[in-house]
Length: 141
Image: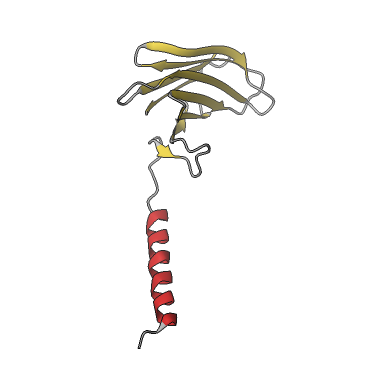
């Protein structure tokens, strides 16, 4: 005879093993990783790291409607400091901004480009004009 209770237990155990195996793979710091829950059905990739004086940066790329949206963010301890942020795609500057960090020490820049076939390589460079701190990272999308 076929036992329904043991079949449910076997499927439940197999599902639990699959979930645990997927959650144990953790990417190394500074390596691109997918966001936990991308919104809008688009693919999102995040690269992050530490600047030379201790601030942290994150570079996010997302494909939306035949475009790639790239957002760079620097989280520093000091607020109201002037930063220059630049995002480049290959050798072309996509976005450049010079602004002060907010009350939490955060400054952002956003760039949008056409999504051409094949991989796109983005470089993020930030410089704090007050302290001369530098941040740099790359993202291949």
